[in-house]
Amino acid sequence: MKNENLSKIEEILTRGVEEVIDKDNLRKKLLSGKKLRIKLGIDPTSPNLHIGRSVTLLKLRDFQELGHKIVFIIGDFTGVVGDTSDKDSERPMLDKKTVQNNLKTYTQQVGKIIDLKKSEVKRNSQWLSKLGFEDITKQANMFSLTEFISRENIKKRLDQQKSISLREVLYPLMQGYDSVAVKADVEVGGTDQKFNLLAGREIQRNYGQKPQDIIMLGLIEGLDGRKMSSSWGNTINLNDEPKDMFGKVMKLEDNLLIKYFTNCTRVPMEEVDKYNTQIKNGANPRDIKMVLAYEITRMYWGEKEADKAKDFFVSAFQKKETPTDIETIKGKKDQTYFDIIFSTKEFKSRGELLRLFQQGGIKTFPEHVVIRQSDKAKEGIIKVGKKNFFKVILR
Image 1 (tube, rainbow, N blue to C red):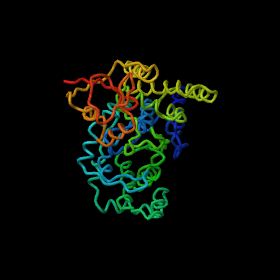
Image 2 (image 1 turned 90 degrees about the vertical axis):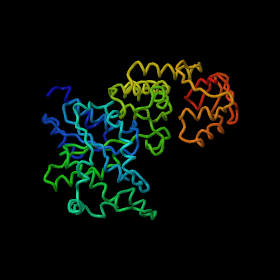
Image 3 (image 1 turned 120 degrees about the vertical axis):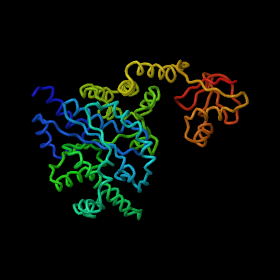
């Protein structure tokens, strides 16, 4: 086997990896040259995939580049049920219509990272919707209730006397059976998925399959320092516009830079180590963050758009110049700034925009005069929040 492949195998087993089960067995299979089936499932609980999801997707791409078969599962069935592996409270069930709407662009988003033409893309309703009570009780018999309630987040909820539904007990069985249905050799997931991933191994054994090996990857913090989550709104989404993606990365806490380089990019680890050394030796983290923002934007939008996003950021936030790429919004002469800005649909609710006005976050540009909610709109450039610019035209 070529040294290049040996190096890639070791990186698969180590880069961003928190735990591998069974590492020796998986290394042996990778060295054998056998074509493996690598599984990842994502529930469409939100219409947007975010950078936190890219950690596992990039690991799939690493496997794919070595010639292995990627099996990407859209959890249209499990998405309705809801996984609470990483939740401190019960996740509400979603209706089928919401799940179907959420998954409309999932393949397009996933296709930004892995080659879908060389992958199998499946929906787990194909097999889970066909299971009956006999199948489910057979699977449930493989696990004890003690195993389920010993999980850290479940134990915490029990101690706090919070509700835990029987539906939640069934979720690991569903994810585990996915591995049986696609005959997975390896499953990739976050550390919060350990119980579900191990359930796959046990269920495969009971269906006469060899148990899958497991690669668990670290979880990525979002813009507010908490775990990146669509429900918390602290995400950098794969479909964010280039300037928004670049700007969001620039908002990250400095202590996350190396973690993001390691998990969310494929910048060679030798370079990542150099950036780490530079930071420890007193380099300005902002300069290295600019490299990270450019690389992430380039990955999803290409060099041309990354260049434009960088130029926009530099002119708008460092040189304080008027950016050239500004969206135009049109309004009537008797309208307030509030109504015109809300018409852009940048804000989910009127209350969210009102809070920004109350915090002095709407200003004229380049004068930086604070605009009040009741002020009548005037033609010109306004700055909305920290990153959005609009050219107001009245008719």
